[in-house]
Image 1 (cartoon, one colour):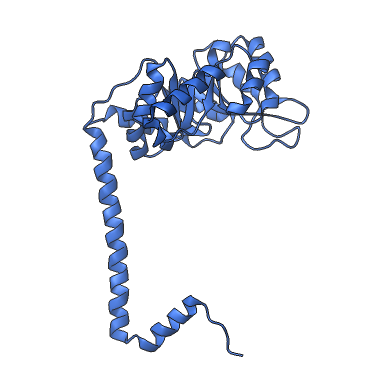
Image 2 (cartoon, rainbow, N blue to C red; image 1 turned 60 degrees about the horizontal axis):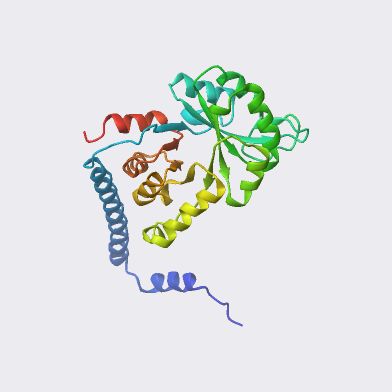
Length: 277
């Protein structure tokens, strides 16, 4: 019984039987030239798009903030060093992820905490920012932390210095019941197509009214100027994450969000400083 060949094996056999040395060289050159051309086209397109943003006037909403993503400035995520480094760079809003150990101790951590020695205790972060004007973006990774988190926030007297993100629509009830008085954004994946529909816009506003959120927190790829204008017109805010390249930053800035979260706040500040140059 003859061996079954895959399509790729058949293609290689065809090349071996039919390609002359000269044609093979020519073929390789064509492939190489094609790949180089594609890379050049992509590079030129990216440059053109990026430069097109510079031609627009850069304005900001009142209270615009830059949030240092946990682990900004090449530090280890969710550590005291990450917080102190961000503060040393003049950052006023810092993101940390919130989880708890099996014994109930609240810690900074992105992944599931499995032992009572994992994660850095949240108290260390609160100790640093109390009696300052630094704000913390508390990214909630599990709603079971909310009651204890609220107790800690009240104990430290920092309700005005913290807000919650990472909250899905189905988790709002847990937030309202266990962490009252603390502002929170609702996680959302707004459609960049439907956003032009009056019905869809009304749906978003009604969702915010029902949840009591201060605004929408979404990936920068899902944000748009139309969404931003809609939220601001109705008294809500737009927070977008996590963008780290110059092109992403320029695209985000023309949207006019209330907050941008990035691992490279210094790069974002440089983009703003050199806008249009």
